[in-house]
Length: 297
Image (cartoon, rainbow, N blue to C red):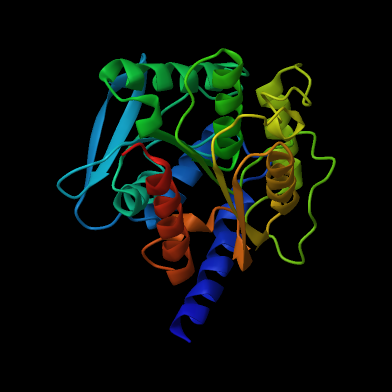
């Protein structure tokens, strides 16, 4: 009963505070400030540790929990490629560090419109290579991300494969944005977070004239052959439900070990409420198990 009431309260908060901030008419600088404030309600577990440093020329935040870590997760934050940061996602990366037993490294990749495609992908790749230079074996590193960061995680895995680099042990994506053309958006009865007009503007700013069907921008159009095991989580109350389902279907068709979890009556990247909402906490725990299961021993 209490959890049901909490879900209702969180849904109303997202609808009244977050969704209005994600409006194409609001200047991006203002959106960045508003969303930074909104993410303060996403709290990491007590005992989490955070270290801010520079890696591959970009600021990163390393999240860890507990006395030891058994690997690394390169985490790519969401925000439509125009907002968000490693700092906004400390709650989620803290919970993922606890669930996976890994150190979670979240880079502040460059954002559009100041830095359109392929800046974010270049920064993600540079961070990956820097982690290997640190001494992490590729099969000791997982890639994860949410929303735009989920699409970026898939694009990074595709680029690494195409450039003959060693691949990560697994990929985990929360509410991934995988089709920036928006030709197959889902129409839920309730969408507490995203507005299609905002995501359309974000896509245009990120692509900056590049085709939105470029697989490194919209990975659902890409080749999935040979990619690592994939976990996809998505809520039923979001316009990106089809993005997640099409991603999972394309990966399975290519022979990728794929697990798709659709959470009824939950919204875009509900995992940010881990530690408060039981279903969000359980989802992140599942993600942690997926990551641990595929790390090299």
